Image 1 (tube, rainbow, N blue to C red):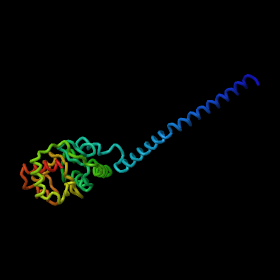
Image 2: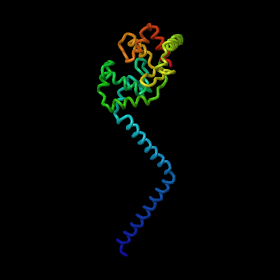
Image 3: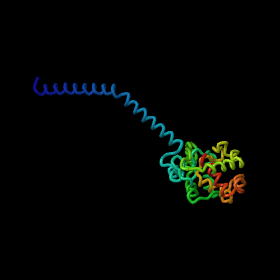
Image 4: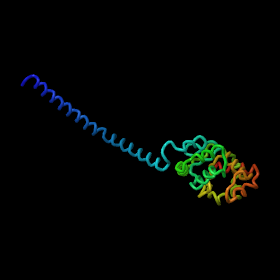
Length: 226
């Protein structure tokens, strides 16, 4: 056997030994870390599935709902008392109000152009998105106990629960009132009183019409604190 043949034979043996060593290391690593790696792969797969399901329901990123965070808060739970809290509102109500802004039935310098800009898919995506969010307590509002008590008596006298639910949680095309922003409630009740805002049944105008300014503020105190 010449020197070249000896070198080739020695090289082949080294290659086989190195390959065997690497295989042993891989097997040992698989035994030690395999469950963890498998777990990470499963988590990654589940995250992908959640992301796909979320995109299927709410639409692909970027979403129209992203533009709502500044006023209406993360997941529709506004912290500013001047803006409505959209989380958990019924689809029928959300759909009706967006259409009202788009048609000019309701007018707002921000909401009107926004509603007009939505594609049909974006429109329905917003309705679905906010209806699925969980409303959180209105913790940024600090109520006055005496005014809350007067407001509660007014809510019972006006039978607000007949349309808005026993806990003012909303149902069908009637909005959830509980926990809405105080300033927003005062503004909307005032607009119903003076005719700036209307709704088809006329029930809100009839309810708000006789209210004094103190009545409106007391009622808003009670509702915002729910």
